[in-house]
Structures are given as C-alpha cells and as structure tokens.
Amino acid sequence: MKIAIIKETKTPTDNRTPFTPDQCKILIEKYNMLIKIQPSNLRCFRDEEYETVGCEISENIHDCDFLFGIKEVAKAHLIPNKTYFIFSHTKKKQVHNQNLIRAFIDKKITVIDYECLVHKDGSRILGFGTWAGIVGAHNGLLHFGKRNNLYTLTPAHQCKDFAALKNKYKGFILPPSR
Image (cartoon, rainbow, N blue to C red):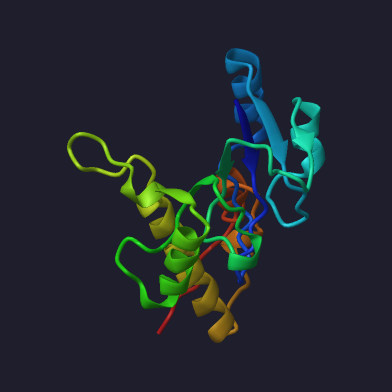
C-alpha cells in the first residue's frame, strides 16, 4: 500500500500533519507501507525529517492509494478517483464548502472525513475538542495581552507541538487585570 501526506492548500494554511515522522517510521517498518510526502515548508516537521525515516519526498502523489491531510483541499489540487482522509468541513452542509462537495462528486473522489469517524458509543475517534480548547484558551490569553499591551505570547500555530506551546508558559506570570 502506498499513502501520501499532502501539503495543506487551504488558506489560511495549517502546519499540522496527519502523521509524524516517527509514526511514518512505524508504518514503514511494521506494515511495509510506502509513504510519499508532498514537500511543504509550512508543515510542523521538515521534509528531511520524513526522508530520514524512509519516506519519499515527491510532488507527484498520483500513484498513491490514500491521501492524508488535515483541512479541506483546494479544488485545483484535488486528484480525481482518489481517497482523501481530511477534515472536509462538509458534514454539517457548510455553505462555504458546497462547491468542494460538488468537486468531490465531479472528480469521483472518496472522502473519509475525520469528523465522521466514531467509536461504537458515537464519540469521535479523531477530534481536536480538547486541543481546540487549549489553543482557544491560549489564543484568548495571547490577544488579551496584545490588546492591553501587557505581554506577548507566540501564536499556537507557530509552536511545533504541544510541548513547545507549554514551554511558552515557563516563567510566565499573568499580570493582574482590571
């Protein structure tokens, strides 16, 4: 089986990735998968980190069986007759993505939407609820500090991972507010 990690094409861009280099290494070694990585200087891991664990860096992913991303794919980048694993933001019939749904149908694309993957009890398998809350709280603090000229924090999307985000709080003291 050959899979690809696609570069994110939604604006604004997203630096997250569906698989880390360490996860790719496991898939390659344990399941003999071939993994292609579309080059991206925006992804939180460098292309070289994937190459080091045995992934192939290539713009051409047409020969891959499954394409993994994070957010919606720009219509111009959709490859017909493929299966995409993404957050398509179409489940709730979002108006802004109706053209994307039409493109999926026209290009005979199968979409596995992470939002629709659920356990037997109905809870989401892949959800960013907790993480979205953490990022939301962080961004709230960031904007409060910026608006009131009290302090500066690095935006969450500029942190490589959760450990890097937590590191921003070492020695941080929230000043009193009125």
